[in-house]
Each structure stands twice: as C-alpha cells, then as structure tokens.
Length: 396
Image: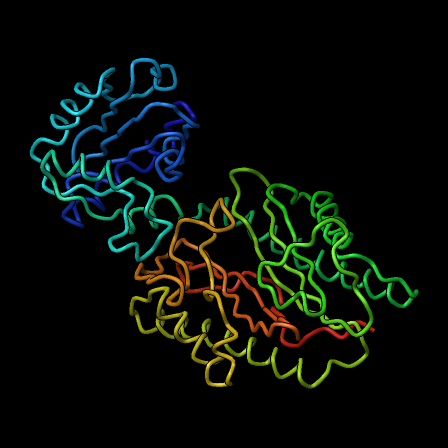
C-alpha cells in the first residue's frame, strides 16, 4: 500500500462499521486545492487543482472520481477509480456513484455550529443533494478516524510535553538572570531563545512561542514584532509555547506564568487562582463524567470552567474558548472545549486530546493564562502536562 492511501486502508473496516452504526450509507470525501484537510489528510494527498471525490461506502470497496489531467497521484489507488474530464461527466458519474444512497456524510456543520468542520462549499453540498441523498455531518467520523492519536503519537506528545515544560522553566531562569544583571531583554529575544532550545531538544517541528510581558499579556494572541516590548523587573510574563517532534507527531501546547520580582502581588495571585481553579474544575468534571460512564461534550466542559471564572467576577475577561483540539495540528480537527465561540456538541471520545486553557485578560493591566493538555485515555482523562502550575512563579 502506498503512503498516500495507507491510512484509509488501515481504518477502512472500522470506518465502515461506524457508518453502519450511524445509519449512514457512505462517507463522501471531496477536495480542491487542499481546502479540506480532513479529506486530503486521510488520503495523504497534497494540493490538486481539479475536483475529486472519494466515496467510502458502508459496505464494499471505496471508489474515486478524479480528473483526467490529474490521474498520476491516483496511480496506486487500490480500489475502483473513474476518470472524468467535463462537468457533465463529473455530475453523471457522481449521480451513478451515489445511486441508492439515502444518507452520506461530508465535512459540513449545520448552522455553522462548529466552523472548523465546514470544509465543503455550499455549492458542492447542493450538487450532492441534487443526486438524491441527504448530506449529514461527518463530525464524529473526523473525531474517530482523523483526530484520534495513535500510540506512537501519544508517546511523542508525552516527550514533547516534557521538553516544553523544561524549556519554559529554563527560559524563566534565564530571564531572571538577565534582569538581575540589569538587562531588559526584548520579547522577541525570549521567543528566539525558546525556539532554539526546542529545536536543540528535538521539538523544532511546527514550533512557536508567544512571550508577552506586562500589559501586552492582556492580548491573548499577542505576537511581538521584531524585538517586541522590553521585559522589565516587576513584569508579569506569559510564555505560551508549542511544538512537536516530527510532521506525523502530535503537538504539545502549554502556557506558563511568572513574575519578575521576589513576591507575586496579591492581585496577580488572586487572578491566577481563578484561572487555576477553573482549569482544575474542568479536569475534575471530565473525570467525574468518565467514572460515571456518562458521555461528555466539549461545550459542557467549557461551561464548567467558565462558570468558575464567572463566579469570581471575571467572566467578561475570559474572552476565548476553554480549549482546542490537538492532533497533528496545534489546533486540531477534533472536538474543542467550547460553548462560547461555537456550539461544540461533539463527544470527547477515547483517543483524542485537547487543551484546557482558561485566561483572564484585563486590557491595560495584565493577562494570565494556564494551559495544560488532556488525553482521553482508555482508563479515563489524563493530564499529560508535567506538574501543572499552581502558583505564578516568583523569579527574583
């Protein structure tokens, strides 16, 4: 089996079982110009300039419908392949392929409830519906067969998590030494140093870092331009870093907080306590649901975490979702921990991972966040981030 189609071949029996369980006649994959990363990722294909469809039926062999000038990437496709050139041929072949199908799954999200799932253009959905079947969301299929971590992915994620935690602490120690020496390093310098350390320790793929100090930490997606702002004594410092070991590996993604002084101000301590308690409440809720044998959805976890910060009076300052899916992408295609930005109704199934990262952002004052990673293992939810932070580190 060629690398392009190995992933689909390995999972074919399980996908077809899942389709039968859901009462869906097939999973219809579609792509053009690599816009649908689920479809291209499952098949291992890069960017193609003509439309293609692959039907994975609930029973029988998959079939591909590909353009005549782009047959080369499909040369080793192991199942049925049909060639088309004109749009009339395409529509006729699609109608024939879907004859008798009542329901097919595609990468859509009704009402755009989960925008990251809306990968198939509305016009293509109309085209498919015109052939007869109802088009339903492939959301749970994506969770199970695209975003689920392999054992190798989990092992790599654990190693990357250790490296990130070590580099974060080393970066804080380096900052403390510089400030003690009377220096005021730039945030860009901090970022560059972190990236060099991640690469040295085998986690340079997809690596990046947000280093934000003082009031700039109140911007959740702050990114220093050039040298960035200066890091000074008395600053709160937010360090968000993410990386993986290889292209096929699973990311680790963490955020750590420090204070460049000998004693963390009470205001900062109280803010971080709210963030920490919201984070820990989310994890406890996941574990309670698991032990009770009850399903849990990303929106429910977001509600629990957000409820803690709202109860402390900081709800309006928590302006993003509680967490995001993690897989081979930092922001993966599995369920997010979200009932703020989107209506995340997907279940958190075994084998997937995500971040839990509540934050408080007070413009002109300070921003604090704690980010850990959680893996839904066969024995329940597991925090994979080493020694999650319980207090802001006092560096001097």
